[in-house]
Length: 222
Image (cartoon, helix red, strand yellow):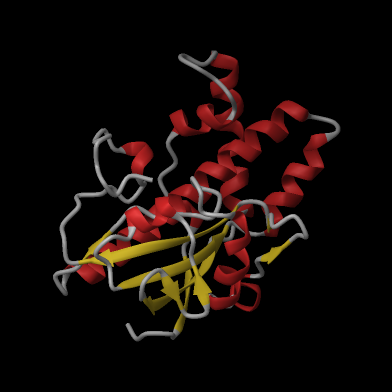
Protein backbone atom coordinates (compact mmCIF):
# COMPACT_ATOMS: atom_id res chain seq x y z
CA UNK A 1 0.00 0.00 0.00
CA UNK A 2 1.41 3.38 -1.04
CA UNK A 3 0.99 6.82 0.49
CA UNK A 4 -1.54 9.19 -1.12
CA UNK A 5 -2.98 6.54 -3.42
CA UNK A 6 -6.76 6.15 -3.10
CA UNK A 7 -7.98 2.55 -3.05
CA UNK A 8 -11.54 1.48 -3.78
CA UNK A 9 -13.20 -1.23 -1.73
CA UNK A 10 -16.41 -3.23 -1.84
CA UNK A 11 -18.04 -6.11 -0.02
CA UNK A 12 -20.99 -8.42 -0.44
CA UNK A 13 -23.67 -7.48 2.08
CA UNK A 14 -24.50 -11.16 2.55
CA UNK A 15 -21.01 -11.75 3.98
CA UNK A 16 -21.36 -9.19 6.76
CA UNK A 17 -22.36 -10.36 10.23
CA UNK A 18 -25.19 -8.32 11.74
CA UNK A 19 -25.65 -8.27 15.52
CA UNK A 20 -29.36 -8.21 16.38
CA UNK A 21 -28.58 -6.62 19.75
CA UNK A 22 -27.08 -3.67 17.88
CA UNK A 23 -30.18 -3.40 15.69
CA UNK A 24 -32.36 -3.24 18.80
CA UNK A 25 -30.07 -0.61 20.32
CA UNK A 26 -30.45 1.58 17.22
CA UNK A 27 -34.21 1.08 17.44
CA UNK A 28 -34.12 2.43 21.00
CA UNK A 29 -34.91 -0.86 22.75
CA UNK A 30 -33.49 -1.66 26.15
CA UNK A 31 -33.35 -5.20 27.44
CA UNK A 32 -35.39 -7.98 25.87
CA UNK A 33 -37.33 -7.29 22.69
CA UNK A 34 -40.80 -8.64 22.03
CA UNK A 35 -41.35 -11.58 19.70
CA UNK A 36 -43.19 -9.17 17.40
CA UNK A 37 -40.10 -6.94 17.13
CA UNK A 38 -37.81 -9.93 16.55
CA UNK A 39 -40.07 -11.17 13.76
CA UNK A 40 -40.20 -7.70 12.21
CA UNK A 41 -36.40 -7.50 12.11
CA UNK A 42 -36.11 -11.03 10.75
CA UNK A 43 -38.67 -10.32 7.99
CA UNK A 44 -36.77 -7.22 6.80
CA UNK A 45 -33.16 -8.37 7.14
CA UNK A 46 -32.90 -10.07 3.75
CA UNK A 47 -34.54 -7.16 1.94
CA UNK A 48 -32.01 -4.73 3.40
CA UNK A 49 -29.11 -7.02 2.45
CA UNK A 50 -30.43 -7.20 -1.13
CA UNK A 51 -30.72 -3.43 -1.43
CA UNK A 52 -27.39 -2.63 0.23
CA UNK A 53 -24.29 -2.13 -1.90
CA UNK A 54 -21.38 -1.77 0.54
CA UNK A 55 -18.67 0.28 -1.15
CA UNK A 56 -15.89 2.47 0.09
CA UNK A 57 -12.55 4.13 -0.47
CA UNK A 58 -9.47 4.68 1.67
CA UNK A 59 -6.09 6.36 1.48
CA UNK A 60 -2.87 6.04 3.48
CA UNK A 61 -1.48 9.38 4.67
CA UNK A 62 1.54 10.50 6.67
CA UNK A 63 0.78 12.10 10.01
CA UNK A 64 2.89 15.07 11.07
CA UNK A 65 1.90 16.93 14.24
CA UNK A 66 -1.80 16.31 13.61
CA UNK A 67 -1.49 17.46 10.03
CA UNK A 68 -2.82 15.06 7.40
CA UNK A 69 -2.24 16.38 3.90
CA UNK A 70 -3.79 19.84 3.92
CA UNK A 71 -5.92 19.04 6.96
CA UNK A 72 -4.92 20.54 10.30
CA UNK A 73 -6.73 18.80 13.15
CA UNK A 74 -7.47 20.71 16.34
CA UNK A 75 -8.88 17.89 18.47
CA UNK A 76 -7.58 16.82 21.85
CA UNK A 77 -9.56 13.58 21.68
CA UNK A 78 -8.13 12.62 18.30
CA UNK A 79 -4.63 13.72 19.34
CA UNK A 80 -4.83 11.27 22.25
CA UNK A 81 -6.09 8.53 19.95
CA UNK A 82 -3.25 9.08 17.45
CA UNK A 83 -0.46 9.51 20.00
CA UNK A 84 2.65 7.74 18.69
CA UNK A 85 1.32 7.26 15.15
CA UNK A 86 3.25 8.36 12.08
CA UNK A 87 0.61 7.44 9.52
CA UNK A 88 -3.15 7.14 9.25
CA UNK A 89 -5.83 5.68 7.01
CA UNK A 90 -8.68 7.96 5.96
CA UNK A 91 -11.77 6.07 4.86
CA UNK A 92 -15.30 6.60 3.60
CA UNK A 93 -17.85 3.80 3.25
CA UNK A 94 -21.54 3.50 2.41
CA UNK A 95 -24.35 0.98 2.08
CA UNK A 96 -25.67 2.88 -0.93
CA UNK A 97 -28.63 4.99 -2.01
CA UNK A 98 -31.06 2.10 -2.48
CA UNK A 99 -31.23 1.62 1.28
CA UNK A 100 -32.25 5.27 1.72
CA UNK A 101 -34.95 4.80 -0.90
CA UNK A 102 -36.24 1.73 0.90
CA UNK A 103 -36.48 3.65 4.19
CA UNK A 104 -38.24 6.56 2.47
CA UNK A 105 -40.76 4.22 0.81
CA UNK A 106 -41.90 2.96 4.22
CA UNK A 107 -41.69 6.18 6.25
CA UNK A 108 -45.18 7.55 5.63
CA UNK A 109 -47.18 4.32 5.47
CA UNK A 110 -45.26 1.86 7.69
CA UNK A 111 -43.14 3.86 10.17
CA UNK A 112 -42.32 0.82 12.32
CA UNK A 113 -40.82 -0.91 9.30
CA UNK A 114 -38.92 2.25 8.35
CA UNK A 115 -37.41 2.40 11.85
CA UNK A 116 -36.39 -1.27 11.72
CA UNK A 117 -34.90 -0.93 8.22
CA UNK A 118 -32.94 2.13 9.30
CA UNK A 119 -31.56 0.29 12.34
CA UNK A 120 -30.65 -2.79 10.28
CA UNK A 121 -28.90 -0.61 7.69
CA UNK A 122 -26.98 1.32 10.34
CA UNK A 123 -25.82 -1.96 11.89
CA UNK A 124 -24.85 -3.25 8.45
CA UNK A 125 -22.83 -0.11 7.75
CA UNK A 126 -20.99 -0.45 11.06
CA UNK A 127 -20.34 -4.12 10.30
CA UNK A 128 -18.84 -3.08 6.96
CA UNK A 129 -16.59 -0.56 8.73
CA UNK A 130 -15.50 -3.29 11.14
CA UNK A 131 -14.79 -5.65 8.25
CA UNK A 132 -12.67 -3.07 6.43
CA UNK A 133 -10.77 -2.32 9.64
CA UNK A 134 -10.19 -6.05 10.08
CA UNK A 135 -8.66 -6.31 6.60
CA UNK A 136 -6.42 -3.31 7.24
CA UNK A 137 -5.43 -4.67 10.65
CA UNK A 138 -4.29 -7.95 9.06
CA UNK A 139 -2.37 -6.10 6.33
CA UNK A 140 -0.42 -3.86 8.70
CA UNK A 141 0.15 -6.63 11.26
CA UNK A 142 2.45 -8.29 8.70
CA UNK A 143 4.59 -5.16 8.94
CA UNK A 144 4.62 -5.16 12.73
CA UNK A 145 2.17 -2.26 12.91
CA UNK A 146 -1.12 -1.92 14.79
CA UNK A 147 -4.37 -0.04 14.28
CA UNK A 148 -6.00 2.36 16.72
CA UNK A 149 -9.79 2.56 17.12
CA UNK A 150 -11.42 4.26 14.14
CA UNK A 151 -12.36 7.86 14.86
CA UNK A 152 -15.09 9.70 12.95
CA UNK A 153 -15.93 13.40 12.71
CA UNK A 154 -18.46 14.18 15.42
CA UNK A 155 -16.74 12.02 18.09
CA UNK A 156 -15.76 14.14 21.08
CA UNK A 157 -14.23 17.41 19.95
CA UNK A 158 -13.39 16.18 16.43
CA UNK A 159 -15.55 18.63 14.49
CA UNK A 160 -18.06 17.46 11.89
CA UNK A 161 -16.57 19.91 9.38
CA UNK A 162 -13.67 17.46 8.82
CA UNK A 163 -16.13 15.30 6.87
CA UNK A 164 -15.31 17.60 3.92
CA UNK A 165 -11.59 16.84 3.99
CA UNK A 166 -12.07 13.09 4.36
CA UNK A 167 -14.62 12.94 1.54
CA UNK A 168 -12.25 14.94 -0.67
CA UNK A 169 -9.07 13.00 0.12
CA UNK A 170 -10.75 9.61 -0.30
CA UNK A 171 -12.38 10.73 -3.56
CA UNK A 172 -15.57 9.37 -2.00
CA UNK A 173 -17.93 11.22 -4.36
CA UNK A 174 -16.36 9.64 -7.43
CA UNK A 175 -15.58 6.21 -6.00
CA UNK A 176 -18.67 5.42 -3.94
CA UNK A 177 -21.14 8.28 -4.58
CA UNK A 178 -20.89 9.82 -1.10
CA UNK A 179 -21.69 13.53 -0.91
CA UNK A 180 -22.30 16.06 1.85
CA UNK A 181 -25.29 18.27 2.59
CA UNK A 182 -24.87 21.91 3.58
CA UNK A 183 -25.22 20.76 7.21
CA UNK A 184 -22.31 18.30 6.71
CA UNK A 185 -24.45 15.18 6.81
CA UNK A 186 -23.41 12.28 4.61
CA UNK A 187 -25.54 11.17 1.66
CA UNK A 188 -26.45 8.30 1.42
CA UNK A 189 -27.34 8.47 5.10
CA UNK A 190 -25.96 5.00 5.87
CA UNK A 191 -22.37 6.11 5.36
CA UNK A 192 -19.37 6.50 7.63
CA UNK A 193 -16.11 8.43 7.34
CA UNK A 194 -13.18 8.26 9.70
CA UNK A 195 -9.51 8.15 10.56
CA UNK A 196 -7.56 5.11 11.71
CA UNK A 197 -4.18 5.64 13.35
CA UNK A 198 -1.34 3.20 12.64
CA UNK A 199 1.41 2.77 15.21
CA UNK A 200 4.13 0.45 16.43
CA UNK A 201 2.55 -0.13 19.84
CA UNK A 202 0.15 -3.05 20.22
CA UNK A 203 -3.20 -1.81 21.52
CA UNK A 204 -5.43 -4.93 21.28
CA UNK A 205 -8.18 -2.64 20.02
CA UNK A 206 -11.22 -4.48 18.59
CA UNK A 207 -12.21 -3.60 15.00
CA UNK A 208 -15.57 -2.36 16.25
CA UNK A 209 -13.89 0.27 18.38
CA UNK A 210 -14.23 1.53 21.92
CA UNK A 211 -17.92 0.70 22.36
CA UNK A 212 -17.09 -3.02 22.22
CA UNK A 213 -14.10 -2.75 24.56
CA UNK A 214 -14.27 -3.02 28.34
CA UNK A 215 -10.90 -1.33 28.90
CA UNK A 216 -12.24 2.06 29.98
CA UNK A 217 -8.84 3.37 31.14
CA UNK A 218 -7.19 2.97 27.70
CA UNK A 219 -5.34 6.14 26.69
CA UNK A 220 -6.43 5.72 23.09
CA UNK A 221 -10.13 5.57 23.99
CA UNK A 222 -12.29 7.98 22.04
